[in-house]
Length: 325
Ligand code: MG
Image 1 (cartoon, rainbow, N blue to C red):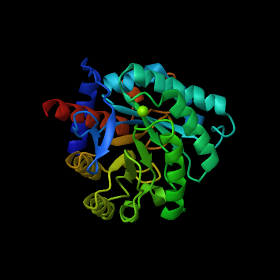
Image 2 (tube, rainbow, N blue to C red):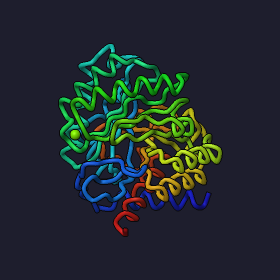
Image 3 (cartoon, protein in one colour):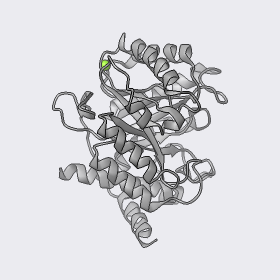
């Protein structure tokens, strides 16, 4: 508890610090199982924040929020979670989805921040995914900022099914964009990295596989599976994570949040914290729906929950450690 209090104090201090970092967006690549800068070969473990499903949180898909997350929180990467099947997602309302996504992409490019274009779908929607990534790769494939995430959290599909789907989508992207990173989903909510490590996709460059953790649920057994995958040379990225349980609820497990983020740093693996919305749940970073929670960013401490203060503190710590490198 004391350590948690220290985190909060640190976060509040950090919120009012005026320092800002300027990142040069280098093209990324995957070499020897790690994400690196393509030119220098230096490892690049990007850390940042995920926006929530756009169909209920696209009020936060705006330039001021991107500015706040990059300048004040020191996010190096922002993930745009494009809702596919649920509610007023891209299948029902493509115009709304592209408007939200492209607003975030354009601002990330302006601010030298990486952006994960996340097909936030739990089922295989091959044709729709190919159509979507064709459009995004055509519009932005020449920008080093873009990272494609082609399948967020497969639920019940086998690796054979996810692999076949992924190969087709990757081929589609690679016909347009030969080099940007592509994040491949792993079965069972991005948990089964060990199964994937035994049978990875061959024949394409710059693929990285996603592992998701929620620190109050996923602990040593999951870390062991990740260590197995790493030992086999599977490149990993934590494209989504939280400190609470896997439903985004309950108490934040500070100890395991620290263990996972330290593990990620030790292994040069990036992570992206879920998520920027004001839903009533532990994992949503903003307090629920009052006028003190402007969608324009620049939030006061009173607008933020313990979870977001912890994320901000950890991002600041990452930035300091990177600067000290
Ligand atoms: Mg490219």
